[in-house]
Image (cartoon, rainbow, N blue to C red):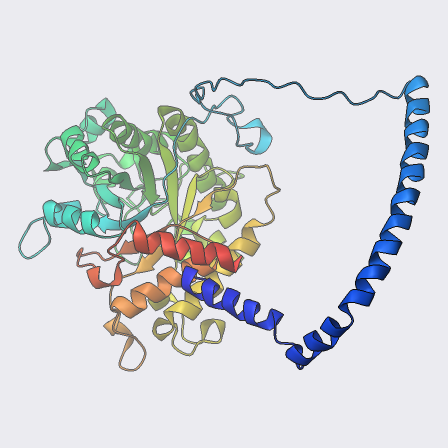
Length: 463
């Protein structure tokens, strides 16, 4: 309820106090009997006063008797002058309880930020008609946005900065779109931007070609290629894990606040199961492999002071089969990640999903359904145990490929509908995806302090 609507309600309640039947007539009838009533009241009051004296004397005697039998008599509290002391600096607390004693000694001194962010396609910044970094910064300065998810290892597998780790240099997968990574981050920090480094994990065309030892292979020794033409790092290989995490460590050292792992999965191709993993998959499922990597990454990165997040298919919230096919368990990943980021793009759901004929045309209903399911899904994690915060990826693009009548043209209304659904489901954070970085600025709140604060008051009043 807004401040304005609360005032109206209060005035209505005030009117109702005096809205009895024929209130004026009742008052006049009472006035005529005033003197007689006053005499009666005085007589009764005198009687009550005498009775109260004897009753108080009785209770005092009883209280003194109790004191003699050992019941202490309350003492008057002396006046004490309190000198305020400075609040001690918080150095961190071990608040998260992970499964099986995992990271039991980890003391969490990190500061959380409610991120409202955009994706930054580093390779296209300022090229052709694409936005420049300065233009994106200006948009964040002027709107509720406060975070960027920035490519540092992209969908092809290229590392977009000058990495120093020997394993990375050995593979030679750098493409230097960011010449000076610490300076790049420092520029964003000048504008209070929360910096998230996006690292594409297991889909990798570069490292698999230059170092086949890290790749998923066919049984004849050749590199496995799925039906989409993609090559994949071996999700069971600890050396592949190390390669990915070393890139993340350099991002952490450069000043990023968070590491975001995308393509945190195996290939969705059915033939992936029959590929050769060098025997490393014996007795392990794909979920074991991906969850194992996340545990390793968290153990290596969280003590460096960065948060760790992971992107997952939105459909795995409700479909165990979908999760098993690509190695993603919504619950198991949430036991270790700081943030889990389901990609709940309405365009990615099948026609008729959740009773919606064309989900892309119903962004609010689709997101509210999925994100409420998210809460139910994660409720199996007991209170007091670590559970990732949910920060969904929202759609800021038009999926015209779905065909006429089956999609909506996404503009300010569709963006706000998704954000509203996120808040309605009980979540405070969100990220916008547009691969070309053409974001719907008109869909963003422009008064960070005023409008956002008012929305939060309304949200608290609803609770």
